Length: 307
Image 1 (cartoon, one colour):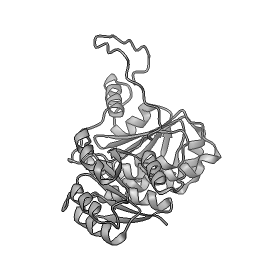
Image 2 (cartoon, one colour; image 1 turned 60 degrees about the vertical axis):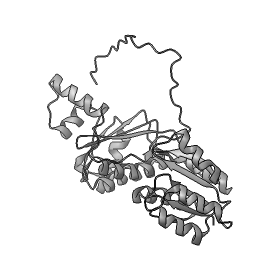
Image 3 (cartoon, rainbow, N blue to C red; image 1 turned 90 degrees about the vertical axis):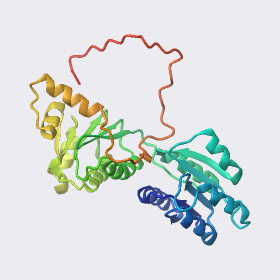
Image 4 (cartoon, one colour; image 1 turned 120 degrees about the horizontal axis):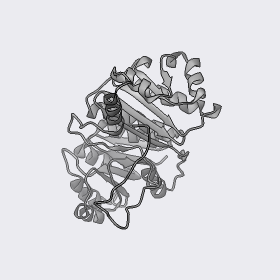
């Protein structure tokens, strides 16, 4: 069994990353700060080190210098993670066997691919098509899933919700789950159960505080058969879902504007705490930048649906 030393001040991030590595058969040793990481680097003799650039008690650069001077661990590869990355920072750590440098929010698949390559251990990851996003507006958590369900991303969502509820200081948020462009069938039952259990557990909420926007009859039947999920309401009308969460009536244009703002806009965080987890995968297609920028271009959007 390969051993990975994980050095990070964030307990949430350590828990998230350690669980994923352990699921894939690695032994994980956690260090809660730089000083703890320095001690465990010498005592545990890991096969790989994953560490945050900014650490308390002892800096990452101090640890790397100690590591280079210790023949027992000098050749151990290092993966560095940082919320703020620039070329000068990378240059300072490259001489110390830092093989990869990832920025936060971290993309899970890219990290696992790097771990797999360095330790020569095959890591299986669910690559089912899935676009997943989660954000807060006031005390409402909006979760949108499109194309399909991916078990890795649902696991990511567990930690993302924990991170967001801390960031926005909303321990028990109302939830609007939007499911679009997905054809559900019996093969999706286990992933759906994981999804709804994740939302209920991580929000500490009652099922009646969760609304689902979907036109899928399968979802309605699935939730109706599960006692723990029976209070979750499914609607195919945005107005109805937002009425229940916001307490607004659907017959005013003001309601439409509020609904649009809630869905499309993120609130400002209430806590000075950066997001560490990215719900996107590294291999997902990202829209390329246009060759020409047209700052004065006018775009017409024609649709009778305000949202």
